[in-house]
Length: 398
Image (cartoon, rainbow, N blue to C red; front, top):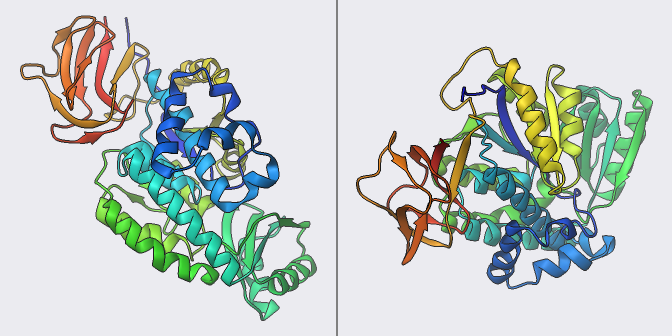
């Protein structure tokens, strides 16, 4: 069967504010739901109850919003990976950056959960110590929003450059109100207060940043093959050491999301796939990258839509490049459990294997291929600690 060459794909992951009551319900009978149980064990909290039964007010709590959005997005990713669809690049908005790093293997699932729990708690405490709020400024150029913050002469700063004509400011309630008034005088179409519990991505989060540095150092982010575009500098990074400083800096600096999207477009990305609840990033991509094809996936029912979208992308690619293609007949073998991976000797790229053939071990658990196919490569390396359902090997089916 001939291969289908795709436009270059980027996976994007949403941040706090995308959570919805009942967002886990469509996934409860999915194999990907196992991630919820694992997250609950690591976090010491009933994540499943939050995803199924929590109301909007409970989910608005920073500590609940971040954890549920992170786990929900990774459930979607898990289901998409089972289809054999992989990105050339990843990015995430604020909290979503932690999801992107977990998706690419820079963070293990367990470390990702621990970091998100620590981050959310630190931000919650910082919000109590320095009460603040946020507001979206619509229909005003970035430079003029910054002017509005300066003219307010108060504790208010730009927090998110989301898309053209969509900028979020944050700071003290008085400062945000004053900057909003100036923004309207400068021509803003609308100033929309956001229901948040703090002035995120501003100096009000300095205490949270200092606390998070310790947790990030303990997690020790790893190098990755798939680069992630950072919110802080809108540049691609694949070195774990760089993320130790970028993640802590992110808390008290603006999210340069518009610039992240432009960086991806400049790298050749023409397909933006948002994985997780909400669909907010899809709208931002449409506003920022005019030639972009976009899709959001939040439920199992939307997986078929993604396959059709991916198939329709094939004619868009100008050529086939390593890391920028997808075979319609590719499949991933995923880990059956968490543990240290050891491959079986004698299996190499180009080798044909059969259904049920042993290809390695995770701890004492056997990893057997559910497919017959031709080995393209191992994704996990010998001695790597993998999580349940983490991709182990990449096959091309017969």
